[in-house]
Image (cartoon, rainbow, N blue to C red; front, side):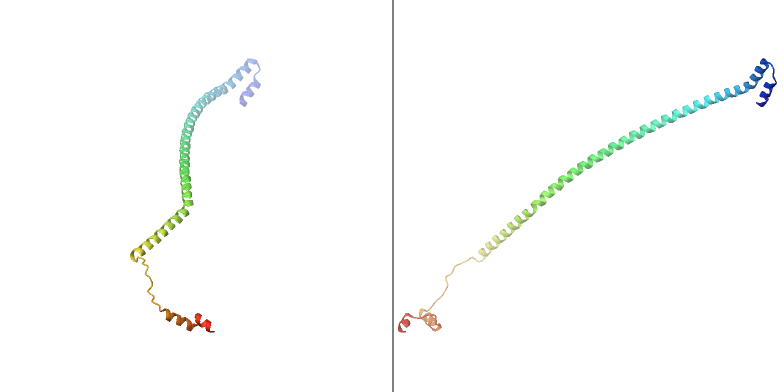
Length: 165
């Protein structure tokens, strides 16, 4: 380049200047044209690679979205199943609680019935095995001996003795 500038300074006519300038600029223009062609080729390759990558990325995103939607549906179904299980467990707990609330009354009733049955069976077996018979007492008292005993004890006084006194 410095060579071209020094030639321009040494030229005197406009034609010589134009010719010197054209000869200096022509290799530069050819290099720029070659660079422009190479740039077009590189841009086309980069654009094609970018489109391919964008297409692959879009496909990956669509696949991820589909997979995510499927997982979300599975999670939702699992949550529904858990809610159903929770409802059934709550119902079972309520029934157990109601049953437990009635349990003391049932136990008391069963114990009472068992006691009454045992008492009735005991009384029936005793009456069956040893029937109750009322027997008059066999007492033979001598009235004269009883009166004499009571007198000696001081608990009985005869009217005749009371008159004597």
